[in-house]
Image 1 (cartoon, rainbow, N blue to C red):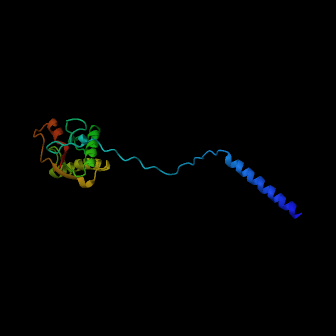
Image 2: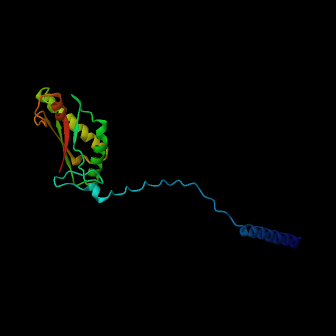
Image 3: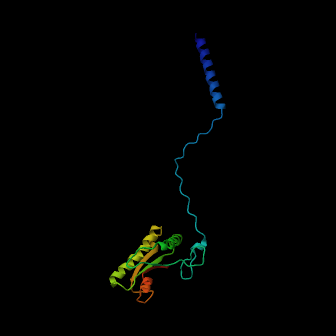
Length: 176
């Protein structure tokens, strides 16, 4: 009886070994497991060198052109809101400053002659700050930006008409 049990165990072992070898011979398709690794976004590509070029007075050029980037931004009467037409220019200024961390700007706030001296100084400061806030929200380091208000003290146009006043309600970016 022991021999029958041994014979049975040997046959069982051979049968299992034979089944296992047949299973190994069949090609097994690899199973793709879903990826849980989050890939980092690609590094931003540095802009061409001519994008960062400046004139002799340190004013930046519009990318790919020989035109200077606008540095004066005009405001409506008694407002410190950036106009929608100025956003593209400000975005280019932000790119220039982000790509040139050694450069900085002074933003001057100006007003027309209407209003008290104190009120116009405060309004000029709000105008310069509006530009500063936009640039910092676009990734420019706050260390690269300085603001100053001249109120009505430095008019662009000394006239006393609506057209003159409109030219005096402005913020000016000066690169250093």
